[in-house]
Image (cartoon, rainbow, N blue to C red):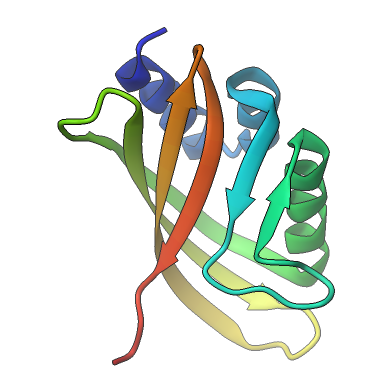
Length: 125
């Protein structure tokens, strides 16, 4: 698959709520995942498909998802990257706070698999 086809497939699966299927189908075993911030419990940078699975487990255990959207892929001049705009409406289970979030994810592809995902957040500055 081309980078654009991988991006289209990722968006298609995420729009159906099949994010875990996207990981199994499209991600390299040695994928690197990078968040805009981290904690002791959930580091900002992790490596491997198991780490991505664990990140999904952590997210689902801490948030009730009311709605999630995925738009894209957005491709540029590089033939190894694409971006996706994600939107989420979630309630943090511990605090009960409902949050509307948007983030851009930049994906890097090599040998037909996603080898890195990096999430960029909109700031209030």
